[in-house]
Length: 267
Image 1 (tube, rainbow, N blue to C red):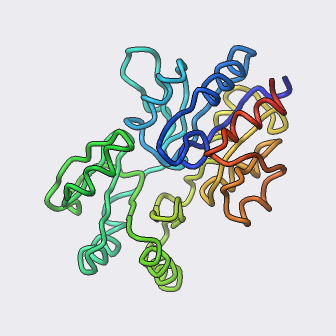
Image 2: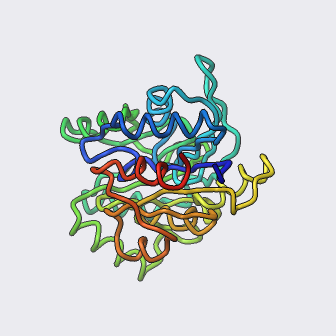
Image 3: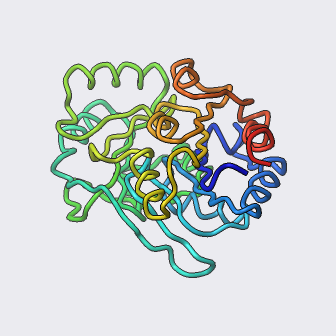
């Protein structure tokens, strides 16, 4: 095996479109771990929706959450610990919150371990449940006096496309960073927060050079991670720009593409 770290995106990569972690992917990830690789889930999800996947994989250790804004360490039944975060204040997203309220766009804000929403329909609650999430209702998130790591808006593809274009032109997000983290989502975070930066920090902690890192992802929020790793692997369900940025392309998330890549380059 040529890789000491295997960084795996979750949605659109490790799990399929039915939010399932298949037996094929589980078996391949466990085998890679038994061979000595450190498995790091690198995801836009928070810890609450990442830890159940680690448990299902029978793994513990580090995960990169909120698209790199928070790095978490978990061990067995112990409470997960925040290792590092790139945080910002609620004042920095005031214009975004007011925009979403005015236009009726759903949004949530997250600390490293908690998520807050101002409203929650039954349909929205069902979507969150698919990600193992139970957001806390908070009447006015602009009154939160705690460090935040991520602002997320969600909507239909056409609506999110329009907002992304509008916000890119207006730079309403100020000195923060905006990224398209999925077809239905836009995330706004600290400008230093990325999966690539968080992965680099972990690799330096373990004294692992980039050439001994394999990263697998499928979307624009994976680009920095794929570029940093010695072997960046894009899923076949990735947008063309992500495929072009990767060294190689594997099968889709509905075809056990993670297993395919691990079998070819690790096992």
